[in-house]
Each structure stands twice: as C-alpha cells, then as structure tokens.
Image (cartoon, rainbow, N blue to C red):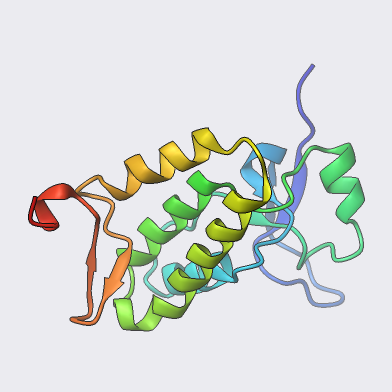
Length: 157
C-alpha cells in the first residue's frame, strides 16, 4: 500500500487565491520545528535562489490539524537529528555564521533536551558524533565568523 500524499503549500495562502504547492509523502514533512531553524533556513535559501530544504513544516499551513497529520498520516512531530544536520549544512552554505549563530544554538539546545529525554538514543548520539567529526560538516559558528566542524585535524590531535 502506498503512503498518503499531503498537499503542501509553497507559501502561506491568502484568501481567494490559487495556492501553489506540492503533494509530498509524510516522510518528507514534519509537523513543527520548535527551534525555528527550518523557517530561517527556508528564508535564507529562498533569497539565494537555491533549492529549498526538502522537508517541509505543516503547522503553519494547517494549524489545527496536528493529530490528523501526526497520528493518522504518520508525519513526524519534529525534525530528526539527521534533518537538523541537513538544515544546518544548508544554512552554513548560505549565510554567515554571525547571521545564524542563535539558530544553531537553538538546535543544540533542542538536541540536548531530546537526547536526555529518551532512554535509547544511542543511534542518534552516534550519528551526531560521526556527523560533527566529518571535515565537511561545517555547522559550528565561531567568533571569527567562519563555519567549522569538529574534525580531529582541526582540534590539534
């Protein structure tokens, strides 16, 4: 059986207007991003005429339908650890660290709370550690207004 397709507006709809959008599978969506990183990433990426982050947030378009989408259609309530890494990578190629440092901080706070709240997060912790140690995963802003990773060669090992 195929998964449902959910109409996802490409912009916030106005009354009496044709609304452009796409039908996406639940795995390409999430209900809400509590960090705000997805929205700021979408805004910065759109201004640079690059392709948008592939996963889309539904809560803005359908504010009263959380249970329908999350329970019935199987849309995740929030981005996963790997979704956030992807968002931060996209953001780091689009804007200066000084423009996004607060959002990066919010994602790290979210990861901290999420990883402490559940008992078995071993796979997420290992994924995050592996991702952050890759040379190309430059998602950490530093005071020199550069993006860096936690690759061992950058840490003086």
